Image 1 (cartoon, rainbow, N blue to C red):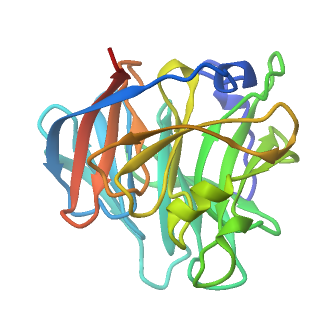
Image 2 (image 1 turned 90 degrees about the horizontal axis):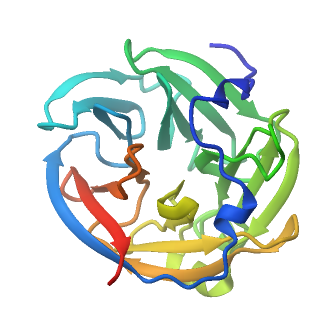
Length: 276
């Protein structure tokens, strides 16, 4: 695996989200409906999804499962003493699975973006964050509103066991991995995290930013401020089946949510829609 990563592959591989899409002031109430569950032994940290498969993620393992029937068809397992120690959320872009990674609970925090080929389920590339401002828990493509621009939104978490959860940040990187924005979570939401931080985050229905905490069965709708610094705006809270942790949206745009129950080792498939 290489030590650098260009995001030029994003063009045409996925929908890049601009600030106008996730800063809308309109308050929308959403309805969660659970559809089905699939047993997955790796469903401990999060789940990613593409057109035909979902990928259950734990610290050093990934299981590849068919969406149609939940049958495991592949996977990857890292060595206990290998470089992969604490995988978190994942997102599929084209034929690549991008997974947030950190050395948590070790300190000082080290974070990286680890990449697998979804066909072979072999690691193919990585990006290491120099002087990471926390433990990377989730990362999503984000263009920052620049025509033709490419970049990322990434969450770097802090936990009460090792510091102050209020230091958690969502950082906007451009395609050169330069920081161009950084936002804190609202203090009331930090209290909801109960000593932990945001474990999952993804762009969902209507191009809006949704995040989860660590344990609460809640999905939080957030909006970015207009300035490159400041505090994220907490717009709404959705009651869901999943006990926090990382989640993913089906790329078909249907509002289908893939989340996990780490206590039951299950992947939960749900529908999120505007409440009538």
